[in-house]
Amino acid sequence: MRLSVVVPCYNEETCLPRLRAALLHVLPPLAEDFEVILVDDGSTDDTLGQLRAMSRSDSRFRYLSLSRNFGKEAAMLAGLKHAAGDLVAILDADLQHPPELLGDMVALIDKGYDQVVARRTRTGEARVRTAASRAYYRMMNRLVDVELTDGVGDFRLLTRRAVDALLSLEERNRFSKGLFSWIGFDTAVVDYENVARTDGESKWSMRSLINYGIDGILSFNHRPLRLAVYLGALCTAAAFGYALWLVIGALLHGTTAPGYVTIMCGIIGFGGMQLLLMGVLGEYLGRIYHETKQRPHFLVKETSHTTAPEAPCVDD
Ligand code: UDP
Ligand code: MG
Image (cartoon, rainbow, N blue to C red; front, side, top):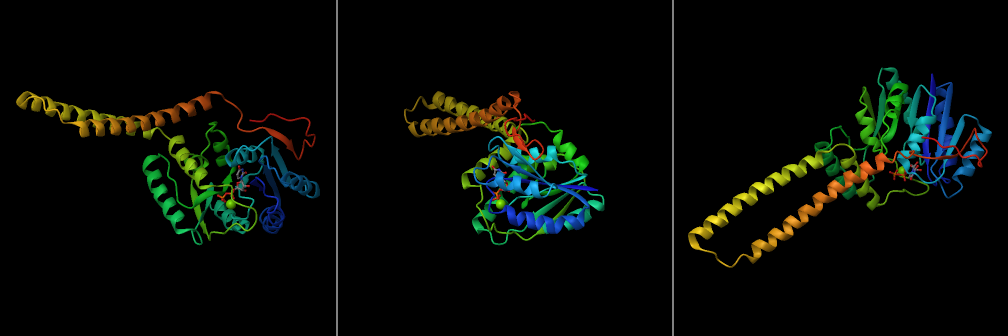
């Protein structure tokens, strides 16, 4: 059995030495043949230099360097495409995904599961953030067609057929939490205690989290459009009722001039709602635009095998 470990790295120079030590401690007993695929996602610090040194001293550590920062989703995809293992694990470079857990995860694969996902507890996290994510997941699971679990991230172990299934999904907007769930297969969950990041810093700001949340809802289905249809139908019905009531009132009692408040509320309310729904339409249109351009998900600048940086290779 061959085990590949994919690690996306963006400005992780401070974490890499510990990651390497942890992996060298955990992996050899697990698989006689393993490879670690480190993906440098256009880092601006010495990450690439360290990856070069790591792969030079130990050929089991392979790396690829993307031509710029394409984001974690693209970096993971790049790693998955280059992984040759029968089993492929994905974990973060910052050791927030404890590699020691891989032992338990491999054991579950041996029991016949195709995906083993690690679910973190939320100990040590700000209470507001925990509550926000809980609420988000509750809403998400109502909105999207795939099942998403709170605390489950990208830390997982996949069999070859799960990886191939994932790679067969060609879409550009990759919301991997949804993709992992969409491919199905028997999935097992292992829990682990939340680990705080010790070196470097998280690349997630509150704003990027909110955008990620919106992406999640919109990338996975067209239910928001269906909601817009219902909302439109509801408003039209209400407007007809109200119009009828006004006309009958006018016929019975003649016109009465007041109505400023009603009109203003109507204009503001409907104006806002229309803008919002147009925004939803625009989001889908933007996604279609993005999708039709068929650009590659990432570009590779250099890998551990083609050390000639002057010959960039286009990879999709
Ligand atoms: N990462 C990446 N590209 C990016 C942002 C992050 O490859 O544009 C990597 C990062 O190096 C780390 C993992 O994704 O290995 C998770 O990032 P981070 O720790 O910032 O996220 P958090 O743990 O705070 O969710
Ligand atoms: Mg992290």
